[in-house]
Image (tube, rainbow, N blue to C red; front, side, top):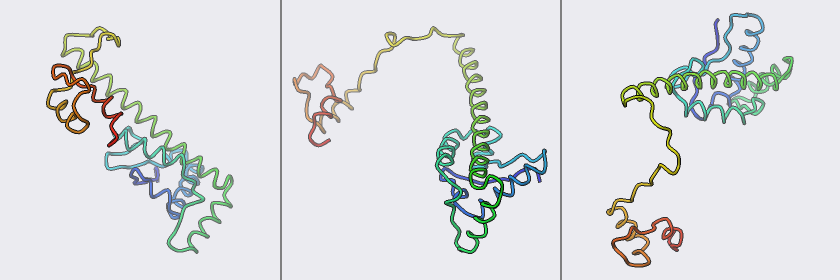
Length: 186
């Protein structure tokens, strides 16, 4: 056995189930017994997170969930199963804390792999965009940027919701943000 594959989504339901907790405990035991064991890999619809799958949003959601999940709160449909698994985990050196740490370390490793993949992709795109657009561009400051004007049709639509501009001047763009903030409807 080279590792444990845990199929997860943003809600990380397997980490809320006692039998998955049992499999995680077995992964810890295998890690301690075999140096070639790779731990838990998190598999998603976008690929294996530990190998840098391009699922940044999913990985962040999973990491947030893992940071709050405590395996001792896992559930089972059969109470006797939960009791048996809880007793095994409690008897293991380090108990629940060890299992929680193991899961945290594995998702942290996956996040680092995803970050490295993202940075590589970002640099590649940056290089391609620089090469196709005539080389590196001047870094823009905030003063260099101009906010786009709201298209007239959008301004008219917003005005119909919050009323016409306060000064009733059609040539000026209405301050939609201000009008929305002052509107009793909003």
